[in-house]
Length: 112
Image (cartoon, rainbow, N blue to C red):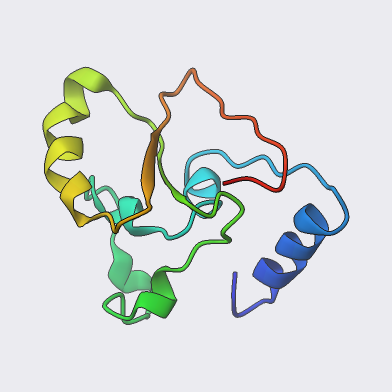
């Protein structure tokens, strides 16, 4: 998103022009403060992107939900222990937004 400039265009269109942002799965993750939850389940191989994932700048989300970190496909039975363990990685002021496959999160800007 950063390489193509999509991140800047998307943020401008949503924050300044009032466009609606809809993000499913990874699109939901990137709406938050950072994309750290993308690695929690171990579903994807992050090495194919060719980025150093230890650099915080490479984990930045769009910040449309500035104080939230999004965890999509949440299933309480499957992910309760994982979420409990990994939530300790969240920084002060970050709220974990758990979204099941049948859930949505709607908000208006500015959003805290």
